[in-house]
Image 1 (cartoon, helix red, strand yellow):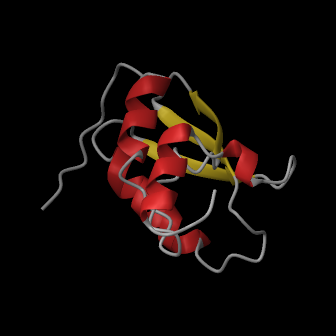
Image 2: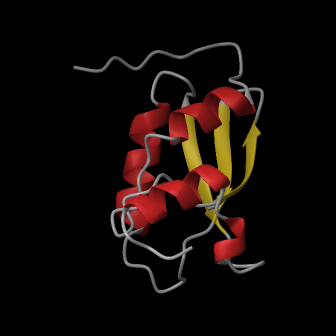
Image 3: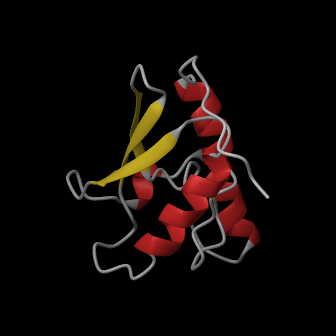
Length: 111
């Protein structure tokens, strides 16, 4: 049902970050932005976005799930989305936002 609409104006980092709040880590139930998993967002002149992104663990089996969610969340905002999986610096709980900490506490995590 979705049409391939090519937008000519590159999306802003803020628009993409806002869309990524809909991408939820399936194990923790918290979005990837508040978990601090997004290290960087770059949009080129062709409106193709590249995320520098990590996961809570390099052994996480959910890269495909998160990649599919991210592509769906940014559909219509960017022409394509690529994820550059980065493992340095390693993710740690210190990267979780205050909002993410509140969500984790609501789920019973001690953070």
